[in-house]
Amino acid sequence: MKTTLFAAALFALVAALPSSTFAQADKMNPGDDLPAAETTLKNANGSNTSMKAAEKSNGLLVMFSCNTCPFVIKNEPITKKAMEYAAAHNIGMVIINSNEAKRGDDDSYEAMKKFAKEQGYTVPYLVDESSKLADLFGANHTPEVFLFNNKHKLVYKGAMNDNPSDPNGYKKMYIEDAINAMIAGKEVDPKTTKSIGCSIKRRA
Image (tube, rainbow, N blue to C red):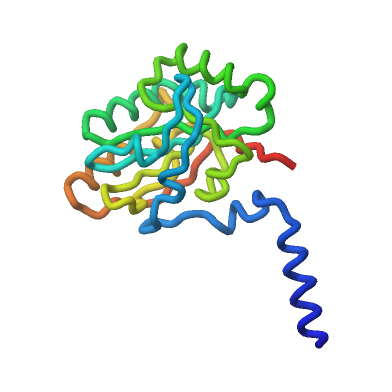
């Protein structure tokens, strides 16, 4: 009886915790399936779309980003480079804003529309309300990327290059190397790198 009561109390405690509590524990690993592929999200261009709709024949690149992070802003040339490289290799791409800290201000939907236009985004820039997708992916920083093959399997996650702090001084473009290996049917190496940037702010 005591065991049953303890289990019930523990379950109630876990259920009461916010989903962001499990962001670290739920981090995706290479080989995992693309989550919530058909979930429809609001796009900064005024339409609604999903990751599944954005994918192309060779896969999908998912980037977690925002309008306000200094790392995002100074890495915009790298983001555009990744965007162009993915398109050239028939890989779809979406950029996802999960940052709830300034959702009523600089990371609002209206601000996202303006930011996407200023940056010349050619891919969907999506609103992740309440950081639900970020929690599913275990995404914790901006910018942070996840590359999936045409079977919806994760083949790479982490940073776009080896020097996010100084995007003009990078020596390795991890995301391009991962795409090249994936397209060639080779093992991606490295499969994971440490993403460096601003933390994704969840709701309390």
